[in-house]
Image (cartoon, rainbow, N blue to C red):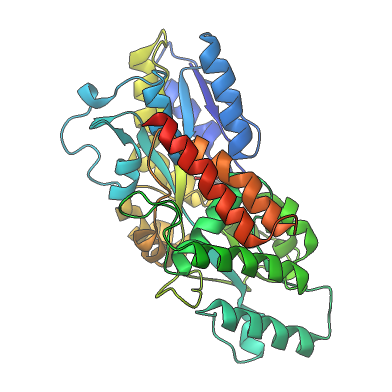
Length: 394
Ligand code: GLC
C-alpha cells in the first residue's frame, strides 16, 4: 500500500510506528508512506495532476477536509458507505463527518481535527496585567502597550497567514465571521454585507501599514509564522493547534509561556470563531488492494492511532472523547480548551467547487493586503468572479 500524507512535524512523529504496527497485524501487507509538499495548495495540485492521469501510484490518501466533495465528485475516491456499520462514525465531531459526506454517502474517514485559534504570549500579557483580547481593537491596544513597555521594536504584534494561498482565505473567512458576516449568504448572495468584508480587508492591510504585522505576513504561511512566534518574536499568532507541541518542545524560546484563546471579534460581530480544518483519509477508487487500504484508513482513524497522533505531535483527534482522555490531557493540558474551541468552529463552504471559490478569492484578497487594490475594489471583483463562476456551474 502506498499512503500519501502531509509532512508530520514535531519531535515525536508516531506515524512510522503506527504503520509498523499495522503491518504486524496484517501479515503480507507492506505500507510505504510518502509525504507531500508543505502547503495544502501544493498537495492539492499534486493529487489533481496524478489522479487525473489515472495512474497515481497511491492507495490511501490524506485529504484536506475541503477537498472531499471535489474528489468524490471526480470519481477518485472509493465510496466507503457500504463498509461502515451504523454508528461507526458517531464518536467523531459531527462537523468532521459532514465534511466527509457528499450526496449522502461517506467518502473518507475523519482523522485530524483542526481549528483556528489565537496564540498569545501568556507571560508577557500577565506582566502587563492583560487578559487575552476579545476584540481586535483590544488586541491592537495590547500590542501598543506591550511594545511601549518592552521598548523592543523587533517584537511583532500579530502574525497570521497572508500569503496568496488557502491559508489566506481561511484567515479572511474568519475575519468575516468575526465581523458578523460571511462569504455566501443563506440565499446564495456573494458577500451579503460587502462593507463588512471591506472592513476586514482594510483592517488586515492596516495591520501591515501600522507595523502591527510585519510586511512579510503577505508571504507568510503556517510554518513561517509559527517559527517567528516560536522564536519569541511576536505577541500574538493566529494558527492551528499543531503548533502547540512545537512551542512546548524542550529548547523552545516560548516553552511554558504560551496561551490559547478564541479568535477576537470585529465591531459588527458577536463572537470570533475559528475555521474548522484538518484531514480525512480516503481510499483511491481504483486501488488494487481495496480491503487492505480500507483497513489501513480504519486503523489510522481508530481510537488508539488518533490518541498516538494527539499525544505525539498535537495533531488533534476527530474523536471527541479523546479530548477528555486522562492520559492525553496529562501531557496536553490544553486539550479540553481546544475541544471548546472546536465545537464552536465554523466550516468553510462545503461544496465540490470549494477550490474554485478559493482560487477566485485568493488573488483579490492578496491584492488588497499588499495595497495593490483598495478593499472595495477587491471585494467587488472577488464577488464578480464568484458570481460568474456560480452562474457557469448552475
Ligand atoms: C491546515 C488545515 C486545512 C487548511 C490549511 C490552510 O492544514 O488543516 O484544513 O486548508 O491549513 O492552510
